[in-house]
Amino acid sequence: MTASTLTSRQLELVRESFGRLVPIAGAAGALIYERIFVLAPQTRVLFDDDISEQAVRLMQAVGRAVESLDRPEEVREFLERLGARHVRYGVVPAHFDVLTDAVTWALGEGLGEAFTSEVREAWEIVCATVAEAMVAGMTATSAVAV
Ligand code: HEM
Image (spheres, helix red, strand yellow):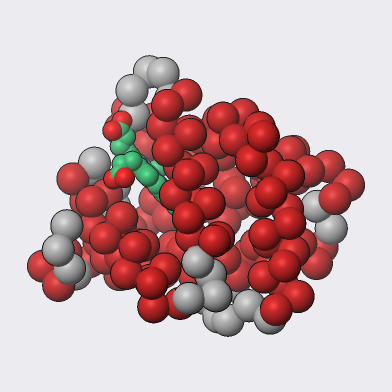
């Protein structure tokens, strides 16, 4: 799955499904990390033992990206800066390989039957877009103000 533009229907599906997670953002973020640590256990040491605050920060950043998905330039700049900061945290581009799997798995757990294949497809595009922009920010840290 590569990054591409969402249709207006897909944008609506992403916003609607994310809205369902907002009241349980801490738990949803924790699920994403749970999955990341299964798929890429070597990343566990990069985080504090207690990842609850980080889980909320992750979801806030995803929320900000989701809010501005229809303003591609703005969201791109935000994600590149966020990605550039990740270099300092010891994150490498390969860690983003598990992102789509972790996010879609957590969405499936959190949304149950509401996580239809149409919703999944829309989120796969979002994840690919986020990962692509963050990795671009990581690999060109000198090009953006961190
Ligand atoms: C959807 C993609 C991601 C988003 C939106 C995201 C978001 C964030 C945010 C908002 C922070 C807080 C600090 C800051 O704003 O600079 C953060 C920190 C961090 N992220 Fe991410 N992140 C993502 C992917 C990843 C991945 C794939 C990894 C590697 C497994 C990772 C590892 C870390 C680490 C190690 C920290 C520092 C934690 C600490 O200070 O304890 N992130 N991330």
